[in-house]
Image (cartoon, rainbow, N blue to C red; front, top):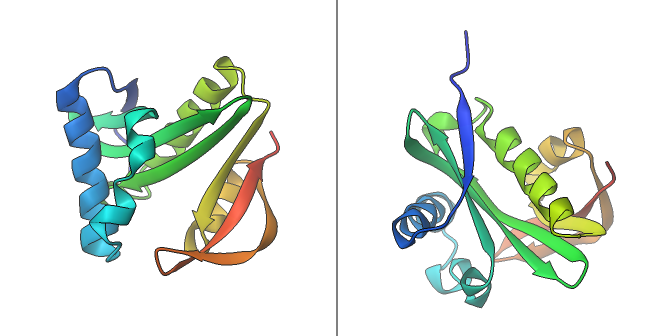
Length: 145
């Protein structure tokens, strides 16, 4: 089975941000029951948002929040019908590259424990204990690439 090409683009227009937020609402609010007031937060105003596109259709998103020389990758979400087809890996690779280009000396994320294997395969290592975010077990992971 051949995977179709995934294109990653940095959100630069309001319509693209609306698409990114709609994906997050579907994945986190509707599928995972995260309250919308937790999912959509103040960091959305200053974050760098990315969109994963397949055949021109938005299928995934992520954001990067820069604080000095640290980058937090978060809100990684891929529509259910497009999971395990390369969109998540493409998004994460692009986010890491973008964070490094912005001068990040440390790149980290809060991974849902259920997805920590994916992040480990992508070069992240777990640090600290498991904690809850929005009622879901998470683990801080730092990129060691």
